[in-house]
Length: 84
Image (cartoon, rainbow, N blue to C red; front, side, top):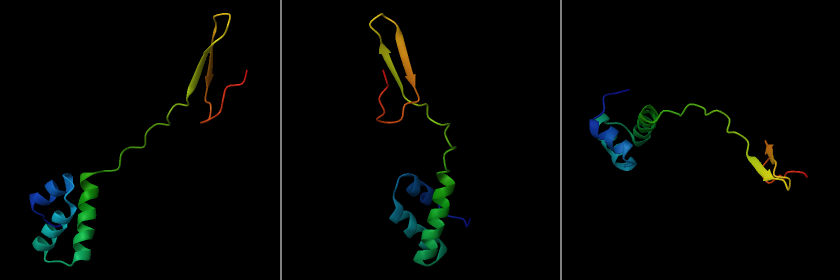
């Protein structure tokens, strides 16, 4: 990536997109389209995609029976109710 002023990174990290693009245009002497492309490239470098998370555990339903025992229903789909 072309050398950009430090203020561009600060603006990107603080959400000042328009100011960052303006500074890129002034520093590089490029078109708006090129400045936006450089902005997106630098944004991606500063905000890498998160690692894919492990699959979230399925919800559990715990139910106490009349005899005092505990029944655990695991892996129910959203909105699905445990069967008796």
